[in-house]
Image (cartoon, rainbow, N blue to C red; front, side, top):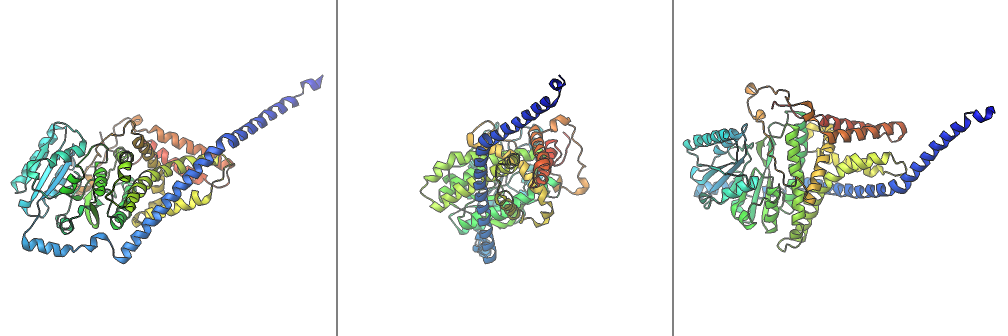
Length: 527
């Protein structure tokens, strides 16, 4: 009778149940999880190789251009043109537009810098396009314009009763003014940009020498790059954009995306391209692509820099990145057919615009960074039946990272932080890209990037930044926190059962998501 009450059968049953559950989970992994995961790895591997090839190609082009002295802007006889202008006094009429919206901290800086440009006073018009909704601020901006008018500068203060079309709408309305009809070129500066006095002398002559040239784009110089860690990391990304992407586009097929500011346009080219359109949140890129399809050429002047301010709060940066990622994807969706069937440009230029400019840089780069390194690789760690090639998972991204960061040598010691931060931001960029491709909600969301103006003021008068008075819950970003928990779980799993020591990367990436998830990034300012 004692044998009937022995516990061995219960233990055996529990063992059988555990073994059965393990077998069932293994069967599910092999039959249901492994095939789609393997397919996802293959897709991500192809995307990684596409991005790798594109980065290597651009690096080779930049090195050749640099060592052979073949930069496009150096082929122009700039000094001879300057002398000819001074001798013949044949100065073209130039319009400078400053679009702004509630720019309390920086409006004086931008207006003052533009009004100080060296150019004949009777051949220069400064147009302040103020869409501000704050009536007190409008009065202050108008007062600043009147101050410069009294000093002999031809300043036009223009306002609208609505914000239709946002920045594109303001620029479009500005070009319709009667006094603009005599202008040959238009220069655009956002409200936080401060050009040097000789900006026009170093940019307009290019357009005078080459009648096929529509745009001269200057480089950005960041005055607050050292303000916090987030601005240093932004500097690394944007330095690559200007030093490599813009230079390659200018040197190979004389096309690149207009950066929306610090550029000089031939007004006739804007009209020929159809003018400013507000169908996406990247009206600058939209105009550049349409002008390029009309046969106009662009030149990027890498040694002409214009001071400006980087967003130093995470909220401002996140809104900016949503606009910069959603807009290009939406424009790609709307213009692909038009680009393919355009007869005025070469097949090579079409390929460059569709494949390199849009598909790889504006879509693939965001997707592969997030989905592969933050989703697919972590999931594959928990499915040991899946083979993850080290070439694609480690060596290719390492090479791409080195190439991307080589333009900012002073920040190489921040490389790990930059990788982690970019991976977190790729989450927002990937989401924005999908919204743009689908034309979904928030596709036309336009939030003006907040400027603080502190970095451009003397340190003696800069007030210390205060801690945010907002409630802690308002600073939480739950999507980042959920991603952080997921990566932390996978890291613990890899520590217990893994063999490749991927938990080191996963723990660091999880920490990055947690840091940003609780709003502990950028600077804090009082409401």
